[in-house]
Length: 262
Ligand SMILES: CC(C)(COP(=O)(O)OP(=O)(O)OC[C@H]1O[C@@H](n2cnc3c(N)ncnc32)[C@H](O)[C@@H]1OP(=O)(O)O)[C@@H](O)C(=O)NCCC(=O)NCCS
Image (spheres, rainbow, N blue to C red):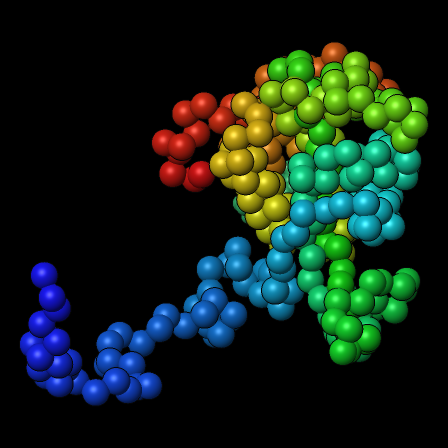
């Protein structure tokens, strides 16, 4: 049927002229960072000036992760640089960083921290603005349902002979994400970053469908923290890493979609 161009012309002529002005409606909600501090939820108030953002990690982040791991953990518990290199290299998609950006002239604690070592730049047109890793999660996948000593290890010949399903280290077919390291820089602990990073990570892992659960080991003093983030205490762990004495914690993704927190 031929188009009725006359009637289309009449319809167009009857329409109001296009304008760049938006129709009057409710104003946009004030962005979180513009809210006066007094009316913000206390949990956001604590991190207000940081404007944190998350990114996946990869081997280019090795220097920063190595630095953070060793300032956050006791030396005998921190993962070695070589182990971090392996994990960032073979499964960076399971590793997340929480960052901020700032200048060496910023007030404490960011300014003094930025003056204490060299941080990578974030903006090629502004070399003074630096990218600061405030926290990270480093993880691998494994076949067992809980973290084991083998999952915490890594194949020493991984550079020469990469295997998809080695007995030690990252197993591409594993259905358990083993969270080996959750670390927030000591200067920024207690501001909600650990919880935000862990919950965001758990949600992303669940939504990506790469595994059925996340498992980790922790000392008893951190059990309450992980429980507050949705993890359940399984019991004493068989892991002997760094002298043992760990508790197994896990979160299963099945049924998690019904949890309003996720
Ligand atoms: C554990 C760690 C990641 C927590 O990060 P954080 O940013 O300081 O924690 P948050 O500020 O997000 O705390 C979130 C909540 O957990 C609580 N919490 C923090 N640490 C806790 C602990 N050790 N035990 C119980 N609750 C804790 C906070 O009070 C807060 O409660 P709220 O939501 O009711 O206010 C951080 O302390 C850290 O990096 N420690 C050193 C490395 C380490 O030991 N990692 C754990 C390995 S198992």
